[in-house]
Amino acid sequence: MVKIHDYPCRYDSGSGLGLSDKDLDRFPFPDSYLKMEPMADLARAVRIGRGMAVSVLPFCHTLEAEALGANILPGNRRCTPRAGRPCLLSAEELFRLPALDLDTPRLRETLAACRLLKDRGEPVLFQISGPLTIFNSLLPTDLLFFTLQKQYDAMTKLFCRTGRDLIRLMEAALDSGADLISYADPMNSVGILGPKLTEKISRDFTAPFLSDANRALDREALILLCPKTALALTGSGLAEWTPHPLPSSCAYDLAALKLKGKVRFGGQACVKTRTVSDVFQELILRNITDQEEPI
Image (cartoon, rainbow, N blue to C red; front, side, top):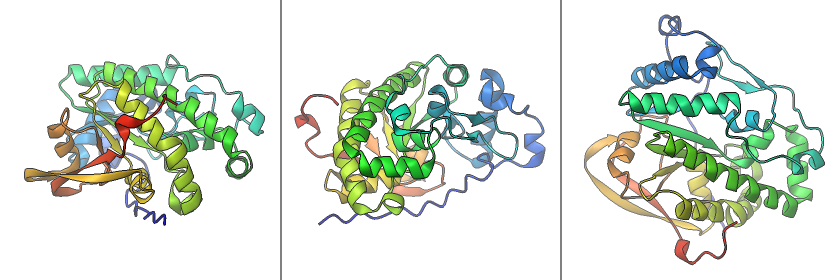
């Protein structure tokens, strides 16, 4: 019996930055979301302000959608970039989406900011968004969920095609100096889709996608999954936890940096929270070496 627990996300995206007005006065907006140099400076300031071990890029979950043509509002000091009016009005348009273009302006600048931070000695975590979250910025939410229910097989094929693009983006982020990759699909959670559909997507897309990422990426890469995704996998019987005791208690992101190259997947906490533990829980995909052909 499937028993998927939801993760109580306590991260308040609010402004998405968590800096004081005085700190924000130093940065130009919206250029700090659009241009390499101010973007890198802002990411470092956010890291210091939150007491994190890594600088996080991008600042939102709209980067991939914008590269596919979504109408994204540029953001300001109070709010990070967010989806505007849907640019697609039918499932047919969704199924005709092109491949993800890694050379679109903001995506290109974000990868360049990652390299700039790395050159400055800053550890970087690069955030990757999952398919449902991407599509939700392109298509009205009610139509997206209707299509998922009524044309599940076609949506699964689209997920898999998008997954190949996301692995290309992961590779580009690592080539740009990212130390860690995070993967989150907030729209694909048991609290939104329910246990049956969440389990199906975990089995038909998420686990094969991560298996492909495991094969494709450099062995040093460590992917931190959103806990909602991790719990969907463990609750569906597709993954299990293996504990790695730490020499001393430390924050989750710092523990991940220390274990880079030794583990492949994590997912016990949200990387944006200041979770402190003396154990790092590695997520092991079951039968990962026995997967058939890539998706």
